[in-house]
Length: 122
Image (cartoon, one colour):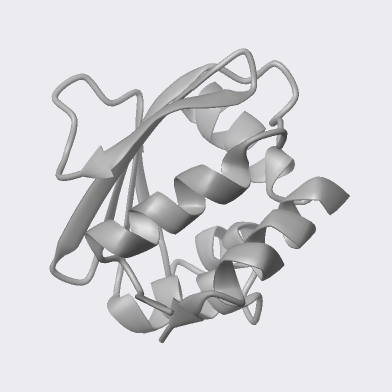
């Protein structure tokens, strides 16, 4: 089991992202969950980079308390609901944000999230 948001957890996410696509979305994403920050780069719907820390040229930034990030990772809270309820703050390109949120509503995302959650120590 990998501790949530640790480097080992990022490795688990990378391993399970193989074969999962987000349509044709290309975005440079930065996420701050509590005191932890990580970034992801998707190109044509495929995860091409995932790492600890921020990214200088993020097109979309998501900021949320650790509790909300945990609920999203566990599948208890949908990212779009967190956004609509103001539990997740956003910055950056609004079109890319909406495309990203739409990708999290796809069936493939639920399976991916469940696979990562199964190996995560929350």
